[in-house]
Image 1 (cartoon, chains in turn yellow, red):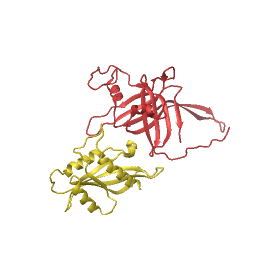
Image 2 (cartoon, rainbow over the protein chains, first blue to last red; image 1 turned 120 degrees about the vertical axis):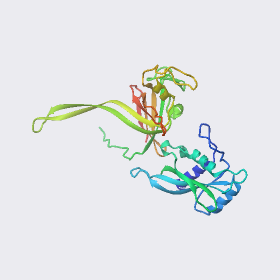
Image 3 (cartoon, one colour; image 1 turned 180 degrees about the vertical axis):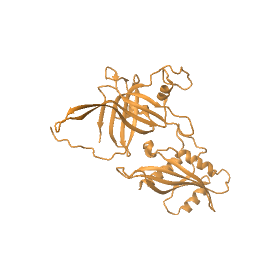
Image 4 (cartoon, rainbow over the protein chains, first blue to last red; image 1 turned 180 degrees about the horizontal axis):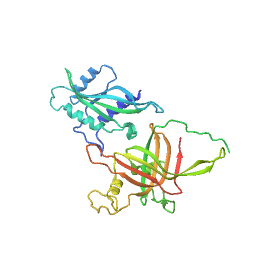
Length: 150
Length: 192
């Protein structure tokens, strides 16, 4: 599989793993939230199912594309850009998690994260984020950039 | 003499892991000292597990910096008379300068001139030690972005604090250097 999707899968595991000792604690516990990688299948039904059954929210990771970091590097060195979105119902029911709390917790899990034990210079970076207008869902998203050498 | 054309012809895009064990620490049954003697010397570096707890984590920049002394002589010009310059250069100091966003107790000791490493909750006099260095064994492991080890330098070194982290709106960055000091065990290994 492409390294871009490998990193997306690792990111999904990272987001829903509990913070280890010494790591930044999360605003809320998001270990029960469904986190799916968008592989350009029928993502809408996946989201609907995840929101319905898992804490009322779903996290979706979409690989947007890449930029080249170093035109002179010995092997291609890319900065993969991902959109990480948190979907929830506009009205929160019962014990369901608030999407903004989930988004904060996602950022806490990803800022400075180094995939697969790599070097700190390959750490994940968090760029702009915010609320996305949508008729059906309440959506918060942010852009995550992860360097990768192919 | 056999022909020795250059090898290792490649473009390099490297990471480095840096480790430093101060003189006098007892690691793997060996008291760290510049030279090997009974019960003294450098802990085994392969694998690097003896050094893991002593890593400078999250090194972001590393560069090799040499001090070079120039001396220019005038020598007779064999063609046409007069003189030409004959320049000699000698490396008088080898060091490696690094930066990281992560500090540690060694840098706190140097920044504050402490007589011993700081311990949380225990006060000690500030400015007691005027030396801006800690001697010890440094291990620098250079890897590709794919974590393949390509070079290893291990030297008796003098750790110096070049800049303590600033306080401000952005995360502070610590700058430090490792200056090579004399030891018969100083080594460079081209791994691949």
